[in-house]
Length: 196
Ligand code: B4P
Image (cartoon, rainbow, N blue to C red; front, side, top):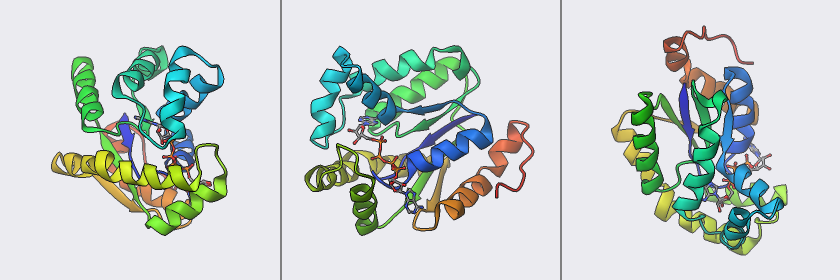
């Protein structure tokens, strides 16, 4: 099962992804987490990524693809995974499409959360991550609109998009996401159960 999760920064992708991978038994591939780990170990890739992340910019596509490709080549991703925060640009979406075509495994569903701008800012300021200053938050929201939001139409046209109201409580958001995945889960032999 191949699932993509794209939403504005701070919408709750990371929060919901952790719950989804537990329920679905999928590997969780968060490009944000991978980049933060690379920064912590001060690897060359992490050092290159740091200046972009700290200024609210997207990390260049080729760096993100390098780190993701290595992880996708690992054995546990043979049957699919949840891609959290990837793709974030049209170029990344097209590279993902080619990669999945080569594997002969189509994308099953694209999840998105809808959250008001004021609430996004409030959530990011509250979680106190080093890249969450008022300046970088404003920059990231702008970059999201310009680079990532067009992907919603891209996937809507392919009939893959499921948008859920992310203003609800974390439990309600999770229930809506799981209900929206019923069809995909049946296709992959998972009998949907009550996720509460
Ligand atoms: P990410 O790590 O993907 O993080 P994010 O988009 O900022 O947040 P997320 O949506 O996961 O929100 P969270 O669950 O934490 O990206 C970080 C950076 O990495 C990017 O800015 C970029 O520079 C770089 N990057 C990553 N992927 C890239 C790519 N593919 N290409 C280029 N660059 C890339 O939730 C936020 C807060 O809200 C939390 O405190 C949570 O507890 C709270 N919350 C969650 N759900 C809630 C709810 N329903 N109600 C109330 N609060 C809630």
